Amino acid sequence: MESSTATPAPSTARLRWLVVASLGLGSAMAAPWIDPLAWRDGLPETARWIGRFHPMVLHFPIVLLLVALAFEVARLPGLRWILPCPDSSTVTVIFAWAAAGCTLAAGCGWLLAQSGGYEKELLDNHLWAGAATAAGANLALIFRLSAGGIGRGFLNGIANLTLALTCGVMTVAGHYGANLTHGETYLTDHAPDFVRKFLGLSPRNDGGPPLGIKPVDQRLLWDDVVLPILDECCSSCHNAGKKKGGLRVDSLAAILKGGTSGAAIEPGNPKDSLLLKRMLLDLEHNDHMPPKGKPQPTAEQIAALTFWIEMGAPADKLAGDFELPAKLRTALDSLLTPAQRKARESQIIAETAALEKNLAALRNSLPGSLACVVAGKPELEYAPGIRAAEVSDAQLQAMAPVASSVVALDLQQTKVTDAGLAALAPFVKLRKLQLQNTGITDAGLAHLRQLSELEVVNLYGTGATDDGLQSLTSLKHLQKIYLWQSKVTEEGAGKFCEALPGVEINLGLTEKPQPAEAPTKDNAAKPASSNKP
Image (cartoon, rainbow, N blue to C red; front, side, top):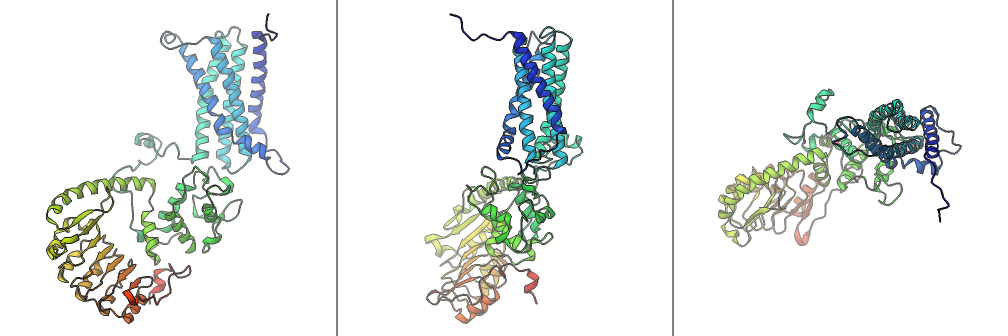
């Protein structure tokens, strides 16, 4: 028994596709000229939802257009015997689905454009190029279906020429689309130097020194700290070409102006600054920014943004213009751009390799353990262990080749003298120093003033006095001092805390609370100049 559903005759199917292509051609040509629809209550949610399918739908017709062009090229004389060459009806089907896909992608793109948040000139360029692509694909299909013999004739040649031109216009549309989504330098940021030179751009800096990694105090809060954070976490959706919510974050003026939800920040008031409030929402919250799946700000980045806003969101202030709490200073030091992180990683690998050569010789002659704090990083810690009695000034001096990499030094119960502590000068990264139960006195403490990164020092059971303790007030990164069974009095500890607020003084059983107020929101990081007479 024959099927009750008859297959349409070729001429009928061709007529149907001609109607579809004609409607697609008309829609594509009209789209750039149609003003945004006057939605009574704004763009309907359904239309907004359909528009968001544009990035997904557009890849389908792109592939089909390129495949159709490749198959037609394969039919050229001299190539048809080399490249696979499908029959003409298969190519026509690919033409048809490519044209239909272009019409669908253009429609979704038009709806997406109505949701706003994009730079007008760039959006218009993308819209015109996208509409031209859809129009060209449908026009090429009309020419092909109207040809006297499929795969032959003048109209078929015009169809192939139109297809080739359409693929060229599609490339332009893709370029503008990438600019809208990722910024106008998306295609040139990683271009080879000869391409950048041809375009009149400066060469990339992929090697050499760590790309201008400045000491914390020399970093401009906006240019060197805040802007790189916003560029990494926010600029993909809030740039000159794509202003989601009407917000841009690529300039301080734009940040202060805000977007459709209001001001992005309130200088001096991080608690009520929308930028931070959105970042601190739960990751699953609909209003959390950046959206789930995008790079999320780290705790250090949040701390830096909070500090910058609290200080009034300055444009031209250095981090060194403020008294930075130790934790904030550490956070700022860790904030690098992706390129700087890559450069620093390469530098760390090179430093670690060089360090291992020096360690090999030292480990055979130095009592105790000298090793990396974390494997693969050029930061060392030293502890004599049960061989403390063998360590004297000579062993401290022997560590000179690796001194600049030592961050923790345990000299408790050793025979190191006051004079021997002069050898600590090259230990420029030393953060923790244990001198308990040694013969160190005030004369030795004077040598500690050169350890600008020192955070913790243990003077338990030493000859340190109130006068010697005062010599350490220049150590701005100091966080904790152990003074039990030393000669420091409670009165001397109190004076030290007044001179260096925020330092924890441990006097053992008579631990002295800080007499100075702990840093607060109002006094934690005031300009350095305000603390000077």
